[in-house]
Structure formats: C-alpha cells, structure tokens
Image (tube, rainbow, N blue to C red; front, side):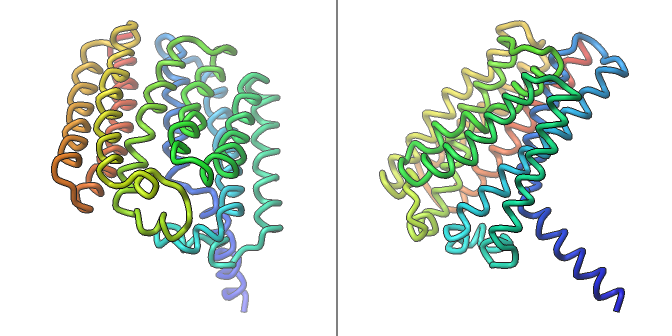
Length: 299
C-alpha cells in the first residue's frame, strides 16, 4: 500500500516537474551562468560563487513558473500537437488551479530569492522576462502574428543579461551583445522546427511563418537570419570579450549553421529541417561553452 502511494506521489511530482520544461530551463540557466562568468574578471571568489548559485536557482524557479503558466494557457493547442500533447495540462492530468498555484509558488520563491539574496535589479529583470514570455509572447504575440518568434525572442534572449546583472548590479554592453546573439538565433531555430511541424501548427491555428507565408519564404528567412547570426557571433571578439579561440569556434559553428540555411533554401526536406533544428541547439551551446573556456584560459 505504501509503495503504491509513493509511486503515486512520484508520478504527481514528475508531472509538475514536466510543466517546467526542464530541457529548456537547463539552456536558460546555462546562458545565465555564462553571463555571470563573463561579468567576473578572473576566478570568482567564494562570495561570488554563492551569489551565482543563488541567482541560478532563482532564475530557474521563475523560468519554471513561466513555463508552467504557458502550459495552462496553451493546453488546448498543446493537445493538438504531437510534440506537446504529452504535457500533463494537455492530457488533463493536472488542473488549471493546481498548475496556477504551482507557477505562483515558483515565481514568488524565485523572485524573493533574487531580490533578497542577489539584488533587486536581477529580480525585476527576471520578473519582466516572466511577464514577457508568459503574457506578452504566449497570450498576445503567438496567436496574433507570424513575427511572434522574432518579437517574443527578446524574452528568451534575456538569461545572459540576468546573469550579468546578478554579478554586477547593472547591465553592461557585453551583456547586450550576448542578448543580441540569442535574439538573432531564435528565429532560425524555431522556424526550422516549424517547417517540419507545419501541419501541426496549421491544425493548432497558430500563425507560424510556414503556415502564413509558406515553405519557400520561411526557408529564405532561415537563411537570411543565419547570415545575420554569423555577424552577431563575431561581436564578442570584436568588442574584446574573447580571444581567437572563441572566434575559431564561432566561425566554425556559424558557417555550418549558414550551410544548413543554404541547404534548406536550395533543396528542402523534413529530415534536413530536423537536422538544422538540432544543430541550432549545438550551435548556441557550443558558442557559449567556447566563451566560457576562452574566459578562463585567457583572462
């Protein structure tokens, strides 16, 4: 009997954990951590390590709250799409009230932690990001315009800014460069996904670019954005934030992403779009990992 109850509790806990979109949150916290690392010249002190760990936890909590709120708002859309139909809210395993309490608790805990243990600026920037994603993007932009990913990408690009603010108490130009890279990376990343999931988006009623403007136009936009992204990825080296090590990695990853954009534009297939989407994740992770290694090798 106790084993059955324990299994049931674990199942409920797993469902709530799934609402936070763990894989997405991992990337968010990783990008925030890069902002923290780059904001501190040389090796961090024990106090700075404590602030960084606290900030990562606070950002994780608020980001998880935004993801859970998104699951409530989009549960009907999620239920129509194979990629998201497994979510507990889409399947009716968790009610709106349960999820709302869960999201509110995470947001309150994370915001309080950031305000009292990090600094007020980081808390307000993180809360603004929460509103930007959960309300402005999810409620307003996503169902109304095919440019939802472009405009809403500002929320997704905030993690390095949050990390920088956590360690310095202000937002420097270096943080804005990192913001710009993620902001420009977001459209080709999501449009590659939308290309091979176009029928699901059409069925859901969301005005994603392949649905409203067609496959050829979207492929052209992916190519153009990868070229813009290539230029943006050079900025850390140009501004003096990194050395030749980062530049080499950035050029290799960005040229490869451009090649995927070119191949998609010239000879489309769903399989190629999947590869481009997966590589976009490698691109961003590899780029920020190179910044991290570069920082400690050549500070």
